[in-house]
Each structure stands twice: as structure tokens, then as C-alpha cells.
Image (cartoon, rainbow, N blue to C red; front, side, top):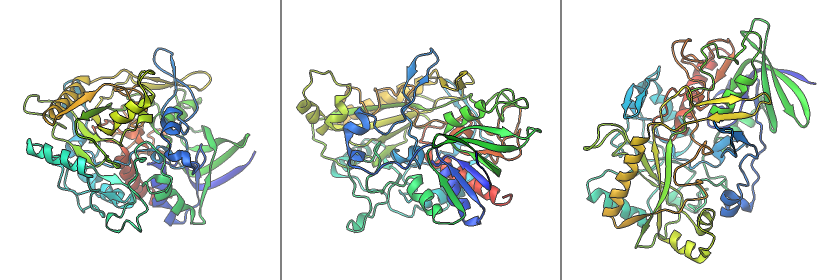
Length: 513
């Protein structure tokens, strides 16, 4: 057994942990990063639809339980960079109103303990760090930005430009989807990104996606004060006799048990696994799990009400890089309905292999390829509300049980109807094959890409696990900085908010390390 002491230990290398190490590496403090997975292998299968979607080659090979005790395989990825290795790189800000109390048809979305204005400077820093391409001012629902994106929006290919123009003609306000990719459109010969069809949901073979590994972790490792241990599973956190300090981080690595310690410990394993780690670390001083005197750890799990579907147009869609357009006209309300509905954006382009997984077996591949050639692919995202009964639990063997019942579904239903109505006006029709890439038309419990909640922050230790700086109320040297801290989910991808918050917390940690 080995013991090593550091100034800071960061557990996890995704949007939260990866961004944090990037911000703190220049301090010169001795930092240890623990990542349960390896580096994602760079191979031809990175761009193979069958390997990625049908065979789930890069997903974690583990089984969780749902609320009925049924087993499922979560859509989660354990690599350096976390789920950002396969995310679609849509990096949107939450709307200013998302930070306040917001009434939905299904209930109330609670206010955050900080405002949009307080996090806005860190949104700008995160957009610049992750090479986000976009244009502030196009989206009528967005808040004020202190600086423009460093890169112009990713251009629409002709079929998507026509869709954008057609939406504008019937009175809507589509905008360019903010994307974190390393693209130089005006100098394609020097561009790392080649605008291929295998971005959304795929690993990037040419390392052109702005993921946490490439943007944050690898540059941090160039500094002598930063150490990364891969394939290092943190099994529990041990406190000192007072229960106020984490004195040891227990790790399983290369078949042996190891211990590490640090002045400050940051957990960033993703909302589900961070909650599970805190629950597994229960002891006499913390009988219900670390940071859990409020009994909120594991509770209020949110993952959005998400749907993916295709519209089939009479006109072919030869688009290669399709995910460039979004629409927020119904984010809060419409002329017919007073409650929020959510966000619409494009998805990566479907191909016949992706369709094959859920199509009837008698449908020839040639037909599926023809369908895909005429398909326009959409992603709909609506807010789900924090429910204490939607929660992460662990059994006696430490296995995760994810108990989740969807809520606030009327808004999502109406958003879907709105999109169908728009498409009908544009001579498109919904096609009802499920997509193996997204498992089905309505994303099921295994779709954990937007996981937030479970270790919420707040001003009151009786109703939250973390303070406004994401430090545990119950401990003096424990922080949680992934999507766990969200008190509500909004209706946009959580990635940029996790990154911005990590930069915000880094400013606090610089003063105490």
C-alpha cells in the first residue's frame, strides 16, 4: 500500500474536473488527478457507426438498476475527458431567467443561489477556453454577454441554410448553435476539424472536438506539478476522527489498493457517480454518506426530457455536418401557452447503420440508406424538475440504483407538437423509426448524458449539500464541481455551465490552496 500527499486531488477529468485542473495548474501547487478510465484509444472505429452506436464499443461495461430493479446499461463513458469525449459539443449558456424561480406546467423550478450576472464572466471564459463558435445576439432568449465568441458561428450547409431561411420566412428566429470544435472555416487547409459526419456521439479521431482532455488535461500535464493516474477507481473517501476533513482517498489501481491524501479534495465524477461515491463513503460521523446531513445527496436527479426524431423531406439532405442550427422561440412560452416548453437543435446526421439498430429486421439496408439521405435530425430538450424521489442509491455491494420517474412532460409534449407543426409547413414529415444512437424516440433512463442534481448547492445547509463555492457544508476540504451542484436543470445542455462553474470555483480555490 502506498501513501502520497498532494495540495489538491481532483477525482474525474470531464467538463468539471478537467476544466478545474486547467485553471489551477499554473498555481504551481502539487495536483493529483485520478481518472477511473484510460485514454480513449485512437483508432478507425472512432468513426464507425456500427462500433459506436450498434456495438456500444466505447460505453462503460457495467450494469445499474432502475426503480423496479430492472438492469440496464447506462450511456456513460469512462475515459480521460469523461463524457466530453463523445458529446455533441453544443455549448450553450443557461438563460438569465433559468437562474430564478420559474413556474412550469408541472411545478416550480427553484432559484439558484447565484445569478446569471455572477456567472456570466465565467461563461465568457469557458467559451473562449473551449474554442466555442457562435454569435451572441442571434438567440432572442440569451442573456447579455460581456464578450463575443472568439470564433464565428459554424456555417450551415445548403440544406440546413434553406431550413433556417424557411423558418425565418414563417416568423421564427433560428440561430447558429454554439459549438466547441477546433475549426478554421476560412483556412480549411490548416483546420484541425474537417467537418465530418462523425462528430455528435462519436469520439474524434483527429482530436478536433473541444473536449476536456484535449483542451484542458493534456496542456495541464505539461506542467511538472500535475500528475495524472489513469485506470484508478476511487472506492471511498475516508475522514479524520472529527469527520470534518478528508484524510485519505482510497483507490483501486492495477489490481492493488492505494491511498492518497491532499489538503483539498475535489469530486467530479458526474452527478450519478459523485453521489454514489459520497454515499459509499458513509462512516460513524456521516452515517448517511459524506456531505449528507441534509439528506439531499443522491436526490433531485435530473437529466432533461429529451427526444430525438427525424423529419423526412421530399428534398434530399446531403448535409455532412448537420448540427449547426437551433431554435428557442418556445423556450419559455408561446402565444397559445403560458409555460416553458424548451429548446430545439439539430443532431448529427443519421446514416443507414444508425437506423439499422431499431428498424424492423426485414427492412433492407438500401432502404434505410435512402431514408437517411432524406432525413433531417432534431433534438428536443425540455426541463425536468427536481424531485427528491428521483435519486441515486447504492446497494450493499455498492451497485448503483437510479430511481427516476419523468415529470413536467406536458411542456415537452407541446414542444414536440410545435416542431411537427413547423415541419409540416416546410413539407417535412416525422418518421417514426427509433434511432439506435439514442435508443428510442424518447430518451430512456439509460440516457445519462445530461445528468445533473444529486449534490445540490445552496445557502441553507438544511436543504443543500454544498455552499455557494461548491464546498460541502459538512466538511472543510471537500468540493464537488461536476453537474451535481445544479438545483435545477434548465432546458439546455449542461456542459458549458459545468465548465463555467469550474472556472468560478477555481478562483475561490486559488485563495486557499
